[in-house]
Length: 457
Figure 1 (spheres, rainbow, N blue to C red):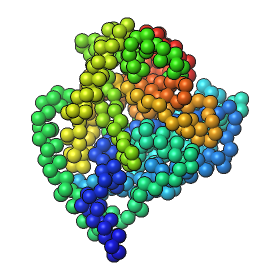
Figure 2 (figure 1 turned 60 degrees about the vertical axis):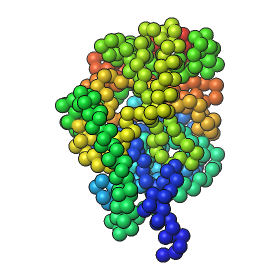
Figure 3 (figure 1 turned 90 degrees about the vertical axis):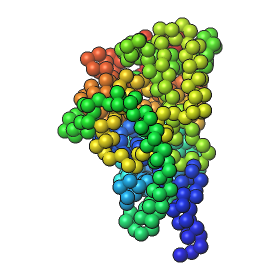
Figure 4 (figure 1 turned 135 degrees about the vertical axis):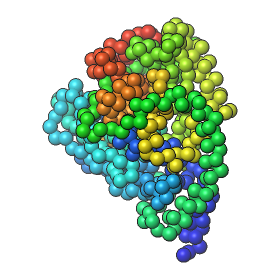
């Protein structure tokens, strides 16, 4: 063994690598994978670029090939130890491209997005992402992309796309897949497990301290949360909103708040209209907070804050909401979140327990997700030339029984590209909001509540 190879092996076994450039999955990524295997489903990020013309097949293939040279060019390899830490390995094989040949009316695109969820997508066996091209009636075209959320969150995906468009070939240094049961892998993972024992001990203490809170949130019905694969998936309604960024900024100026606060207030009004409030009439907003650093190789570089919102008070004066959000962010910086201290236990969680704890992790009090992705690089808008529209949505394959057990769902993802502000609303409430036709007027009314104007699609 050469000196450089021995040095690399030492760094891998001893954990003496830069945390932002480690092959070992962070706990959040491994938790995402455990959830995928336990529940038989997992979130995916869906992007749709609309073009007024047909796409050149060579340009699509070139874009797909370039994606392998960035953060998406990887898969995870399981540890040989049942409690071991999984690792990222290189995957230079491009994701498959599905070519639909028959033109489709624009209004049928939402149904096609649902069908894409039935295509194979897997962060371990591949593909980690896939593309699809759908010609539209009238000569237009839709380029769609589906990415496993275990592989990359919104910011990682957008950066990978921007790098591919710009032709940047980034060597993230992922090792080639190796034989899992080799002596080297067993040695490395044994050392890694021993090295993290202090973290595991602290996590057990944190778990015991908060046990009484979590015990109240676990539902007995959640023990049977594994998906029946014979049960059809529900087409969760999606509505896209396109707003003028300058007009939204003027509205925030009138109210004396930041643009993120205005979107949160809109989300709270939407939750109220969908009946997602607690006994006191408040909305539980859960906001992912990115802590992605330069050269960060995590798939999900995320933490979260929770803000309880009075949807009536924030309609005319959302300044209290802004103060609460700033206080929650300050607390996150000073004290961390409630979940991070127990994350080192993830490698030791069996799949049956992960299924049992799903409801507790999501919360039993109708949480509302609000992801504020911020401004994306302009190159994200032009994978195969400039697109006329970019839509981004989180998708997950739920059955009707799962949605009923979870009490429905509501999730808003907001991002900005250039002079346009985009919001994706995904919402479902049994017997109340089960179709896009039922969701769209609720979204329109919530926008009006906050003095916002947007085109719905």
